Image (cartoon, rainbow, N blue to C red; front, side, top):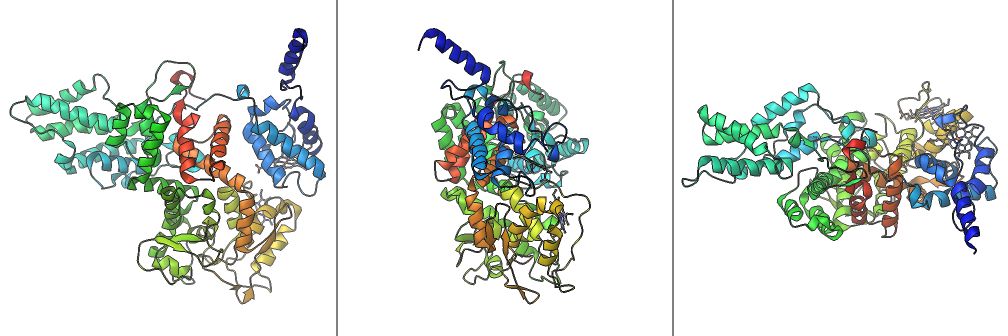
Length: 620
Ligand code: HEC
Ligand code: HEC
């Protein structure tokens, strides 16, 4: 090719946003005409149905302005929810043209188009769980003092470790002060005061060693300049006022326990303009709060000092070690319980005790534990994440097993049990989920379907319109109509079908599970009809068919789980610039048979986990 021709080709490519192969722009040529024809009527700047504007995207590159929107478009088109059913539909060829074209553009972006942004520079206050675990590991006190702190809000991403919601109201500051005092009074001395005053060394030398050691563990990094002098001043003043040695030390330690450097996970600023890699101490804290909801232990801090945490292989070794530690159960407990919403079972759902006398506090607690043990088992055994959708085993104790009709389990402790059929295995068959999505006297296929769209597929329906007709509170046949018949009648209206056609069929497939998750064949004497038709025409009849339908959508499930786990690991909601790292994580997981530890390692290796914005550029 002659030089000038090459020059023109390159100039043309840059101007049109196309690729150097001269293929043109997939979005402009193949996708956009279909979007104009089938979507603009309702999604331009003026009509804005559902708040969605698809106008103003001119070339493949422009989709990077809002990749979340276009990923959502792919989901809506793929699921046949858009265009709405009663509107002109694309032909099969157009349908594939639209979908394949969009996926090609979204899955293979030119790296130069991607925002290179690891997310803001955040201050994380320790959540209540993190505070409890941290003082346990720092002082050897398992008294869970933060249970009496005001509750943490659930922020973006829905997790209580989200930096946005972890502000410090005045009442909390008071609690920090009084708690520090109580903790230090109760702390076994020998545990953290590693030095005893000895006759041949001056007392101040010993005090300095003790305070420096305590402070660096509490701050999770080397003690900042000037800090030891400040603490020593407190110590000497207390001594001069007549306090004994250990009490004077405690007075100085109290200052450490109410310092922002203890109460917050602070990533100190370093000069720079682009993304800043975390220093190894910061990485150690991110790791330990992600996997343990607690401070780094000595072995992790040693890995910082030895330089192990500076190599990817070293980080992976530490992750493997940390996941073997019993403290790693916190990841399963805090992540799974909040993701699935099952942690709050005790607070929200309240099956009628008259109708369901089996629903005791002990049974409820076992229900809450089941998904936690399940996820913990996946972590321990590096199992497939798809087991969360469909498995032939679960975790149960005697009480829960009895609810499931299994007779071969004894004792209070949950253990792995194999299931005789495929009805139950996976989160959609777990009693906590089934109970959470029911009313006191009946199931709600609407709530169950909504839960699946929300928590399993990550495709939540829009919030319900304000005036929704109510259904009877009970599932007994009334006026000759079953609950299902009533719901079907409601759904006949097009305006209702927009949402209910997506939710209800998935919920109906679970009708064989009663409001506390027991298997049933009949409701009020009538045989259960557990069939439904999804918007794309797929028929689902019963829980096994539902799980198969969910497995056909495993891409959505894995994306949602990845987004949730990354958000939990970062302690913040995800943004547009996180779309590319999420895709990278998903591709690693897909290439390794959906292994659980692979997901965790990929999250740890990801750009937003390893980097952050410099402080100057934060705020957006
Ligand atoms: C006749 C009007 C109409 C047409 C045509 C239409 N939509 Fe929609 N769209 C809506 C309405 C109404 C909503 C609001 C949510 C709902 O009721 O389901 C919506 C919502 C959406 C959403 C957000 C959904 C969510 O739950 O997050 C996306 C994305 C979307 N549409 C994409 C498209 C695409 C892509 C096309 C063309 C292939 C399209 N729409 C065609 C009416 C339309
Ligand atoms: C924008 C989406 C949307 C539309 C449109 C919509 N709904 Fe709903 N509806 C929901 C959601 C979401 C819920 C679950 C509410 C909850 O979580 O408490 C719901 C709940 C219900 C329930 C209660 C179910 C139960 O088990 O008690 C009924 C009944 C209902 N809708 C009927 C209707 C009817 C009739 C229409 C049309 C006039 C309609 N809905 C339109 C989203 C929608």
